[in-house]
Image (cartoon, rainbow, N blue to C red):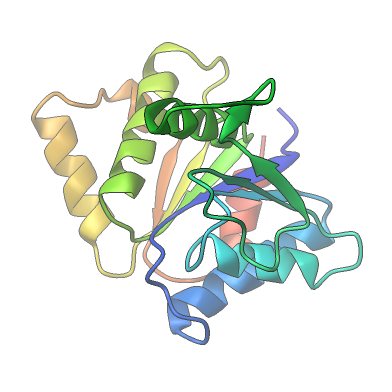
Length: 187
């Protein structure tokens, strides 16, 4: 499968200028340079950084799916409001579901540290990789602290995710941007 879009998942608490933010910003920029669209949840932190990088490139695309009237970060150049359908306001739960569905339509994913929302998104990816997507979609975890490694191992050991769901997963303990891009894009 040719990769046309990469979805980013992670927390809103990542600060502009921090090491993690700069890694995601550079990753977004490098993906845009090879024509890959950045997809995010449109908020701050781990959703803002790759969008900032992507839109720093001429013709770079950063699509952001927002909900609950929260609006997009200033780097999103393709905003999508998930709070309405056919002009009618959706209840919060439906907004969340629509937004997640759009985010999951990405061709591959990058996950960094986040919170409960990030874990829900990761579990949805694992579920579809286990039961629905053919071919499975690649998931690159940027995990310098080891938290995702521990979490994924615990979920596997307790039967919450299958071995098959982990086949297209790779943990990156460091921020080697080109290594991450090469792995995501290799066939």
